[in-house]
Amino acid sequence: MKNKQRFTLAAELKAEKRDAVPTEPENQDQSNSGEPATQAQQVDGKPVISGYAVVFNSPSLKMSTNDGTEFVEMIDPAALDGLDLSKLVLLNSHNWAQPLARADNGTLTTSIDDTGLKFTAELDPSVSYAMDTYNNIKNGVIGGCSFTFDLDNGDDTWTQDTASGQVTRTVNHIKDLYELTTTAIPSYGQSSVQQVIQIESRSYEKFINQEKDDNMAKQTIIDPNSNENKTGIPAFEQYVRTHGETRDGLKTDGASAVIPKELITPVFQLKQSNYNLAQYATVKQVSSGSGTYPIATSQQSAVLATKDELADIADVDANMFTEVPFDVKTRAGKIALSNEVVEDSEVDIVSEVKTQLQQLVDNTDNTQIMGLLTGTSFAKATATNIDDLKKIFNVTLDPALNKMWLVNQSGFNYLDTLKDSEGRYLLQPNPTAPSGFTLLGAPVVMISDKLLANNADGTFPMIAGDLSQAVAVFRRNQVTAQWDKFDQFSQGLSVIVRNDYEVIDKTAVINVALGTATATPAPAGK
Image 1 (cartoon, helix red, strand yellow):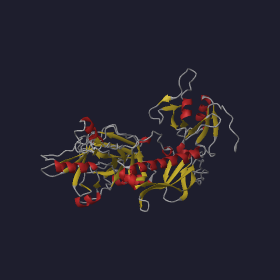
Image 2: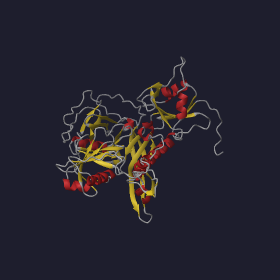
Image 3: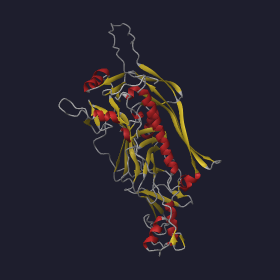
Image 4: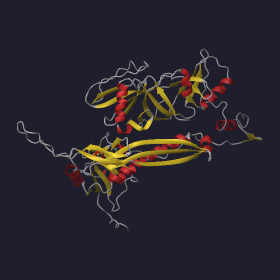
C-alpha cells in the first residue's frame, strides 16, 4: 500500500522559548477543540514547539476512493501500539531537506496519551527555516500537523451506517510512521478535498464486494482475518482440511488442487547500523553553491586593554571569527524498477526503494565526515593505557570543548576491559550517552568497524574531542525524483544531494591510536 499523508486538524500547536521542560503538565482541555492554541513565553533559551501530530478517534476531512466514494478516516487508539518511534523525524512541510528535530539525537520527544501522539521539538535558533517555522506557529500562520504512514493489508476496517450512509475507515494499526511535519492547512471545501485526498486500498474493494453480497442491518463490518471469499493460501487450507469437499475460491485441475503461490507481504530487512554522524557535526543550511561561513573561533584569548580617562578605546587585536569556505558538490544516484515488479508485488516496493535511497544519503554523510576526521587535518596521538587517555582529555584538548569519544566496535571492546588500580571498570553506565557508557565523564559513541576500520598495526582508532567544533556540513538541498521510463516500461527513482563538508577547527579533535601495536604497518605504496 502507498504511503499516506494526513492532516491533523486538532493539532494544538504551541510555540515557546524556554530553557527547561516545564514540570507542571500542560492543559489538555483544548486538545480536541479544532483550533490551534498558540502561545509564546519570552524566556531565555532555545525555541520549542509542541503539539499533537496524530489525534485518536477524530474524524478526518472528507476523503474519496479512486472511484469517487466519500468516506472519513479515524485513527484507533491502539494504532500506535508497538511502533518504533526512536528514528522519527519532524520536518518542515514534508521537506526532507528541512528537518526541524529528530528523536535519535534528543531534540524530538514524543509521548502517547488518550488524545494521541504528542510531540515536543527543540529547534536550533541558528537554522533560518526553523526560526521561520517557529515564528509562523507563534503568529498563527501555521496551525496544523501532518504525518506520513504506511499500513499492511488487513490493518484497517470499513463500516457504513445505514441511517446516514456515512462510510468510515478505521486505521487499526500503523506499520511505519515515517515523519511528522508542521503545515499550514489550506481552507478548501469538501468538493476540493475530494479531488486532493484520495486513497487506493484493497481493503475497500473487499468492503464493496462484501456489501453487495450481504444484507446489512445497521452496519457492515469487514473482518480482515476472515477466510470468507478469500482465494490463495486460506482457500487451499480449507480444501485440505475438508478433504477436497470445499473448493470455493480455489482453482482445481480434475480432483487435484492447484497449489497457489504464497504471497510474502513484508520486505525482510537485514539488521544494520543506522546512524548519521552529521548529528554530531555543525550543520548549516546555505542558500548558494559556494561562499564562506563565519564561525566564532574557539581560540579567542585577547583581553581588554586598560583605558585612561578620555583616551581613545584601543582596537582589539584578535580574530573573532573563522571564515570557513564551502563549495557545494552534487552527489546523486538512481535506480530503475520494472513496472512488472511494481504492479505484481504485494509490497509497496517503490516506498521501500525510497527508504534505501535515504540510507545512501546517510552513508554519504558518514563517509565524508569520517574522511575529514581521519585525514591529515587533525593531530595524532597514541594511548596505551588510561593515563595516556587522561592526558589527552585533560591537557591536550581545550577544557571548553564539549568532548566525546568516538570509537569503533573493536575499540569499544578494548575500553570495556580497562580497569583502574582497584579493579573497577573505567566505562561507566550512562543511559544518556549514545552507547550507554561514559569514559572520564564524556559520552562514548560506538560505530561500526566497517565505517572506522582498525589500524594496520593492530591498534584501535579513536577520535577524541568536539565534532561540532571540528567539522561543518553545509547543506544546499536534497531532491528525490520519480519518473516513468516509457521505452523500458519501468520507473526511475533518484536522490540528489548538494552538500559540502569542511574542517572548522584543527585543534577540536585528536586521532588516537588506542592500545599496543602488534604489527608493523607496511610502508606506503607497498
